[in-house]
Length: 140
Image 1 (cartoon, rainbow, N blue to C red):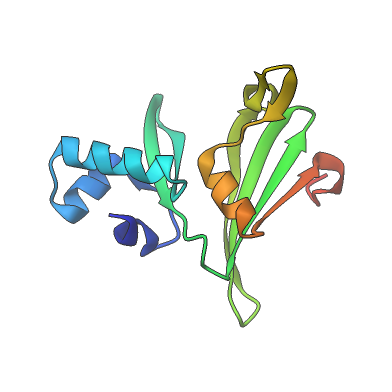
Image 2: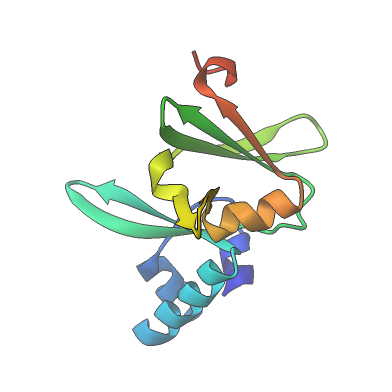
């Protein structure tokens, strides 16, 4: 399933994954959950009309073309995912809403720590994530 999600740098709906791999609902659900827990896919909620739908993007931490930028806009987090080609061109998925920074601040014992989604942790270990605030993001 992960290889299927990596074929094209775009989000897939649950039904596209199910149809593309000819699997049952429970098989797709279980596989997507495992991949999300490992940080190999990003799950986002996108709206089609007025209905929210989960969509999934495969991420390969070993892909040298992959770069992620997390931007803090006064406590609201956004991210851009970019695949940079050798010829200077790139493909970007812009404006993925990560929600409020406070959603990721957790208290363990007497210490406050940041607990990012697992896909950010996995990519940060590979040096593929940069963090900035809105004023130095190039978006202002």
